[in-house]
Image (cartoon, rainbow, N blue to C red; front, side):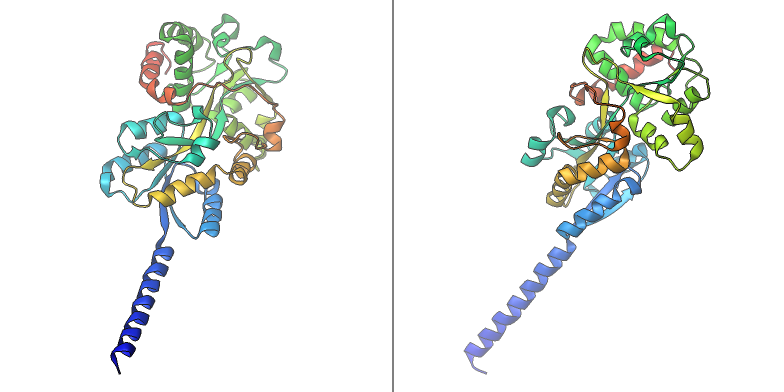
Length: 344
């Protein structure tokens, strides 16, 4: 074998090895997701992302607070690239815990409205849920309703069902009120509002709707996501309870109804940053947003995407344009205010 043959063979071997490494790199492309969303509410989209890109998605699901605790304890050794969780307050807690980093993406900045993104790009909203007033048909004339603030009026004494102050959704609602009206006014409102509770707060959002349907109260505050789930449930008792209740959109002549997000944050420990950002960009594309709206009973963050027939029946509404970062920033103040007001 002469030198040229040896060289040619060496080049062939090198090329094969290089191609092998390249193939391995493609096969190894992955993104690791910690999700507080249930598997059924996120995995179909993740599978579609893998199908279109070849990037594998490794999914770990769990309770929101437990996942944040896990991320914090794992620190720089965490395998997670993305945290998907519910409520801007929780996303802010992850940012404050130092387990996230800014997510740079022109596509996200261009498609997701600024109020649904962290001011320093640590998280971005993936879907919207509103927290309107829900009332019992035949017991409440919707013309009596107007704003969240009006629910402190004595006419609602003993007529309101709502979750505890320990619930992040209520904390965010109160934080939005503080951002608009100031802490002093909201503390007075909260004391009067608590005085209108029909019962000590207990259970989740569905329990507030069930309580209203059972005659324990006339008004319930709950996220639209839960209400839609009850209306489309295979559980006939849940469906029957929800059908006794209707949605009222508050504050339509002012700032608009309170909304919140489920969202994604890029972890500080991410080893697959490019793939992680690519996944988030995929989740806010029109097709993905339409799936969210149809299947999850949530509203899209992307403008111009339709909603499910269930949500469409409630009509269009004006949403508060407050940047949702404020909900996290004011969370501590909101919680202390609620405690002082006697909101258990």
